[in-house]
Image 1 (cartoon, rainbow, N blue to C red):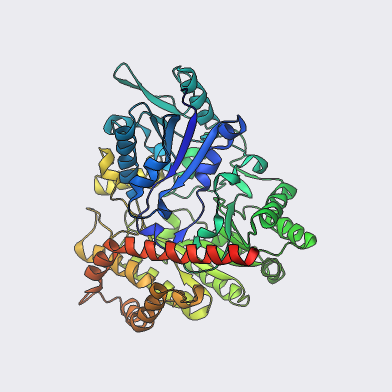
Image 2: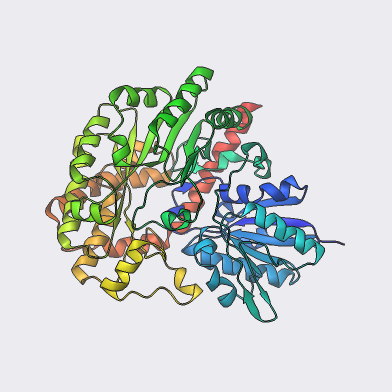
Length: 524
């Protein structure tokens, strides 16, 4: 029987997937063209699977399966993707394994060289190239000439780099939302929300020195940031609310506010149509928020906005200048005070530590900024700091080489332990510097009492975390205020807890399933 089925798999995550599990939008986008062509596709999300995920994978594969596609980002997903490929080949060696996603976009060369179970890699925007690859495989033909597809031929790796001359614009009407049967199992923390992630703009207009986006978008002809049509964005939101009972829309643009008037028009249209939904924005910069007056912020809040993720990055003006954030510490504080007058909106600040040339004084400045932000805004949340990872093509990659003599990983397995929320390690810093970075990581969970601000404590896990937050919060704030890393036993406890997070994920999955069951009962 001719093979024609496609299985798209979302692999397991590390620490970053313990508290937030949103629907696998990357798999939906990658599937757009193949579904449009009438292909038979399914989605398997291993983040929702029980511990025996291999059985779940096996149950979705049969003699008609053509390929298994895996969406991979750095860290644990790399390791799990390798396991998935090995399992698939043990079930049926004729099934093709394809890697796509952010990791293959930046490091396609490692995968085919080091993982014998992967047959093809799709790098860059994947919808069209993946559909062509599927068509070629069904015909038994080579994917020669398909931009973005890497493969082996006669023992050598054929590299066909992605076309980055234009953004990939996906018509939201073509997104195969039906491939996911139940969206109520997705969410964050213990909040009872039906969350959908969407785009309101493509690309980014800025050149942050640590970010890979400027390196990719530099090849695009024309504007690097392009807003989507206002009516199309609101039509999309209205559809999700009506069809899937979405009560929260999360804009996952690289940056939503390059043109603040664009967002204003979106929220005005949402209000005009009477759409009742909460809004969150992942991409907001300090220099953009400086342009927002109180009238604008009131309008954001009235339309349902309850979360702005802000890239503050550092409390050090020297570091802010190096990373090209177009702001200083005083700008961050003034914005924070202004937004404190709009308590309907939570602020979630992102920071990055472990940067080349970073000093202990730079870290202390960040610690002091954290405390001042929390003291001056009751709805302020400090995100766990991102640890700097040198990405090829970025300004700071070259600086890391010059400052540290840094060499990028040489093997695929080297990427499996690179977790954003893992304990920080870098040969460029002293032991005291590394300990301070670890202290910032651990205290960030507790200094702002975020567990009580954004969860209800309905599940036993979040109740326990809430109690722990009350107990450890004062200690965390004491450490930051005094920049004190002595008797730092929390460092070892954190490592143990990190290894036990699989149990946390299972508890969270059970809670979401109970919520899903209750919602279905209420609807009937």
